Length: 201
Image (cartoon, rainbow, N blue to C red; front, side):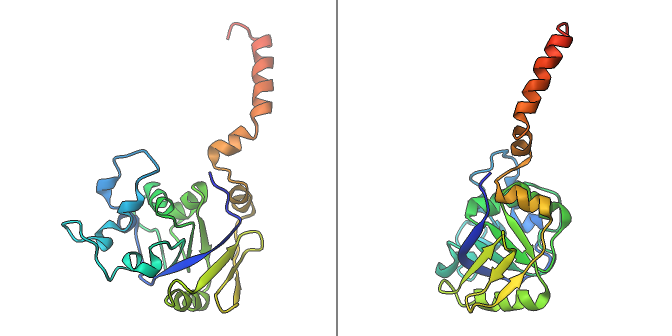
């Protein structure tokens, strides 16, 4: 998993509330177990017409936001069914951070396990960043996980809280497998000892 330390990038404004996981990645794209390739179907029903043409008004189809790495979203982002494909699709598109006033619990935890930082901020802060994001590609937002701050393009700084363990994992690029591999030496030692004590096992 890629580490998340500091990110400075374009933020796309998505002021909708209750953006659920089926809006993020519709159910027909859940057949794959591959983490790559889902970015093209991110927000599929909002990005494309039924015959596959781009909807020009949708934010991620606008030139200023095609390379957005941050989403500033409405309340309760990631609600709905539990699907890890949702953070997979965001990450494959290039989104590394989502900022909102609240997230659905399962989606929130899945983000950390896939290298995405979900930032919870008060409504006033999200409103400020939403206005900033509406300025387009010239308004770049900086998210610093180490200092737990989000800095708007005008220099306004907002501090966010994050669980220390989740922060450690994201800073060091550790998903569940990475955490296990940190104990590889201890696991090898145990296995060797177990083989000596119980050679029949």
